[in-house]
Length: 257
Image 1 (cartoon, rainbow, N blue to C red):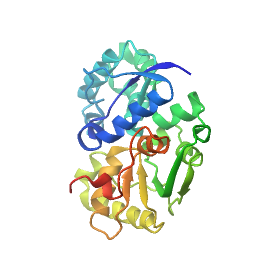
Image 2: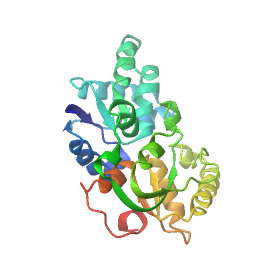
Image 3: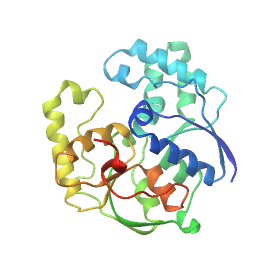
Image 4: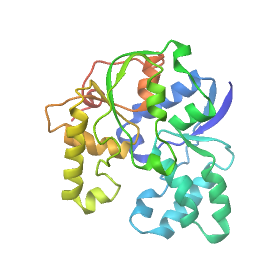
């Protein structure tokens, strides 16, 4: 299936986890997509919105709607940014743009829902293989999108991969955008509890597709004896079909600490 899509790269992915964005492009191209990347794109406005600056968030939302106005389908490797566009743009734009915001949000898909619900990809048909044990943290924002087991469905199609889900898998990691900064003590306790559940799986790799959650849990994991390789869904899928090279293990792909 050939399809033209646009890629929206979240701020934290661009700054901290660019390999996730690269993997997303290579994976989509491997699946037959033509990928556009509008260079004028900026933040979706979620940090403003989370902090109560609704007007400022609305300005960035309308900018994003303008930048991607020519694209009928926008893919992002981030549940939180997709949820911001779909569930919250209508709350922060000018009243006369609310219908436009709703229509725009419907065009924004998180990577896993695109692969499962629009493309119906079966990676076993591509002889996907990734040897190792993976545990998975599902970000809370995925629930805003109605996403539940899409990532486990995709991982089940990869030969050699064993998925070990943690206890209390639905529990928040404590990031919550500005919550982490405003309520650092509570956030830290939540993150430590989450890492304890994840590390109990003894997995080789930790899959997190939301960069905010990844940043939060990575910081805690660095302070423990559990050193998984930190991966996004895009990376593990791209590695499994051979469009990006799988490096040696290590926390966050051996990124400098």
